[in-house]
Image (tube, rainbow, N blue to C red; front, side):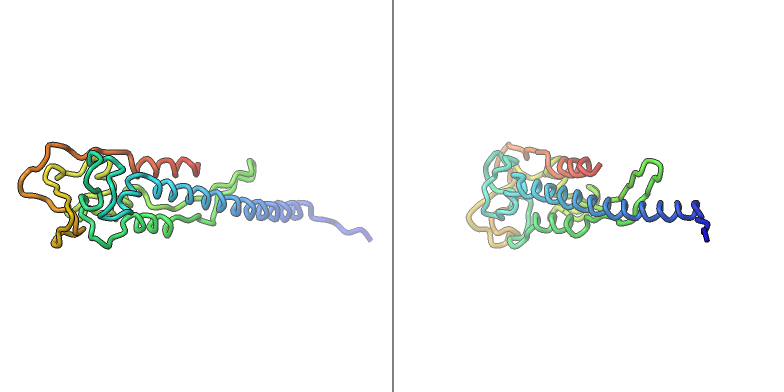
Length: 196
């Protein structure tokens, strides 16, 4: 005895099964892409001269040339001797960058879209405060300028200073100014572009 097949229902089931298989594969692929590009993003931050200099602490050389190739950026910014601002920045990104496993699916074009969450540049600025200037970010200051270089003194030991190596003098000691460089805004933009 022949049985009838509900072709409409069968097609719906097959379509649903096919869609789920595509979503699973696409999710794995999207996660691989995000992992790879996040790693590149973090490496770019770590290998930037500004990051390398700050990570070297109060004894590092001014390889970023933000201070005319002299003095020390870590001490100039005013970090405490034991601070690890670059590790803090990288951890912020690592801990808050992830893929939303929910997706939008276009059954006609078989196109899947996933949302990625990562700290925005504004959020990065909000959690990287300049130690001596309320409301300002050292990350943004690298690109816009940080005041006080004319009064900055770097030496062997200043026990009362945060970094133990740098202080702000009451009298001007030089005519030079802080040299701005491209930093997080550029690396953040590169990362966002890599995900599109």
